[in-house]
Image (tube, rainbow, N blue to C red; front, side, top):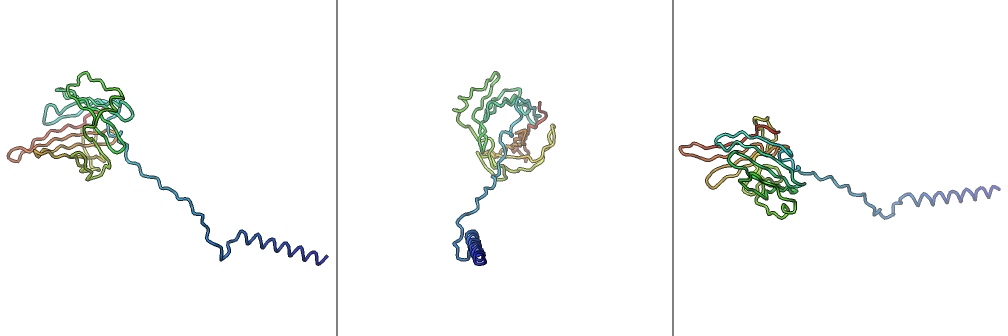
Length: 216
């Protein structure tokens, strides 16, 4: 009986050692080839360029200074997912414009004056329209250039008759005649101010401004 107990104990000890050697890495075991799965860091999304227009079906009024046609109303209509149309009425004419919002920029694809009874084209016509110019482009950072425009500021403050805006983006474009055009954009409203400057004689400067006054 004592011999049998010793034998059973030896077998149990042998089995235990075998199990331990199969689960515990030994000094001479080759390194494991399994690697930890890589975790992709979420990519930072740029701003939604759709928000750089006035709200859908809104009518914005701009106060003008320096020219009788600097005062105007702007009607904004969201036509399709990536197409936005505007009607700008300055009491002298009505200008119809259509924009296409792309992933990294906004392009103007249509512009026509004397659009007193304008209808916006159907979707299939909009798709075939070539771009006229880039209206706004990413990245919205100081120094970005496109189509003769340069982003000069992205964190400005602007007082208007409507309200005081912060985080204002200001673009400028200089003409061959030394004239300068500035545009001011605010997320959620789009273009809120427009400035035209022209040097005059004897150090004088001619300036025309259109500034947001109200939004309905």
